[in-house]
Image 1 (cartoon, rainbow, N blue to C red):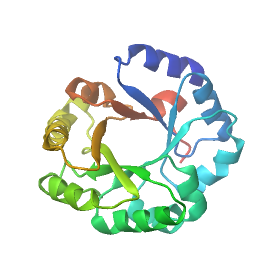
Image 2 (image 1 turned 45 degrees about the vertical axis):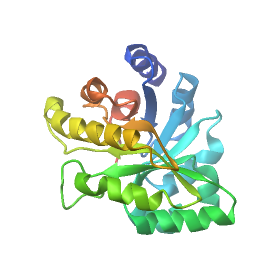
Image 3 (image 1 turned 135 degrees about the horizontal axis):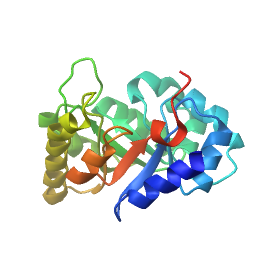
Image 4 (image 1 turned 120 degrees about the horizontal axis):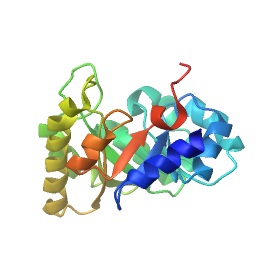
Length: 222
């Protein structure tokens, strides 16, 4: 079923849009099956999950961290974690960026990151407010061992995916603004928006990286 789901999604994605399998709570066998079907990027919310499955996933893929960086930083910033991870999609402060930079310097690695935007301006959620994104990017861009590669947003959760559109549009406008600003050490390559229920809306707005879990693997057990 996983292989069929992946192939169906890949067939409908427009050229230039990449699929990221959101693998929260999934087994190594499930992740391997998704990669065999064509998934190139796997996203994990928790380092404990990533470290549990990583040694047993039989196929090569990029591993992205998509959980809350601040909450997970104890495990996220360990040497072995940073060696495994290919991108951190949830940087939302100078402080966490500096910590990533400092740890990556010790292993001679430049970590690709996305800036997480709190497009819904929800106080209970992580992410930088849209009006503060450019200032944050200009500060983080001065660090030598992190490389800003774009933006990521969750958007508020709605029953109707179409209700997410205004938040995706605002994030896309921010993405274009930063891209056109020509800030040194910033490469606005990825706009990561949309999940299983909203990825089609996100793509219509301009997302080029979509994080899909349930539609690949089925409902989570937790």
